[in-house]
Image (cartoon, rainbow, N blue to C red; front, top):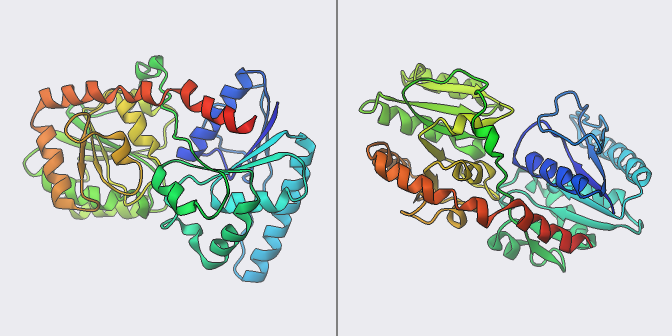
Length: 362
């Protein structure tokens, strides 16, 4: 089968990681895979099999006015259609709202199957600008399937498409990657780790405030944040204001986060909202005990409170601090929860997840 996957870039992020995993899986199964990205292809973050055709279309245009934006999107649609036609796909799969809309416009009257996928919480995603919101309502019914990641997101999109399918992210952590040498020098004390893009969504501002309070009595702990983003300098400034700049390590984006996670003691997810949090899933697969805001959506599906991790009310800094302290102070409890957390590797095994994708593409 010829499958064409479309996403804005492969430069990092949960959706990008999932699409690269899917592409490599299908390539190994002897499907003909093409990946189309909007960027210039200069900074691929994830490994892509040599048998995969990857075209970086370089169609990320900047526009200050709506007319410029309209013209730029018409160009994107034209270029997308050209490369989709060249790939002669049996199936086109697109990730993330604005990309989905452009793909649906670029594939009008083509005979191939079109599958679109939402990868975040629909009410909070930035694509909910009025124009994109209405385009989504108008165009999503044209797709053969709409893939989402949780039942509550399925309910939200039930009226958007006649075939809304729930498919979770796979938990794919190669065992050897846990033992590789970390790409950054880690502190020797106890380590709390978090991972994600440095945006408002991920709530690292809340986490730094909470960690500052914890550090006063638990100075044997450091906080490591993996990721990049627009708020990095702002977050660093906040750490300096709270006098914890020497205890908070901004490790940046790394190729192998698992070698770092496996050397940490506790993982925290401070997100204000999620689709289905890859970072949390992968931390659990690494055997880390976890603490997470019970934000919409995903954490409550992965964490059984008190068994393989702790859930606290969304954006509640006091409860997050209390939960983190409870695990920081009890090594045996951390070890017990970490062992239970590893079971997500079986529940969300790659073969199980890809069997669901195979069912809807055939």
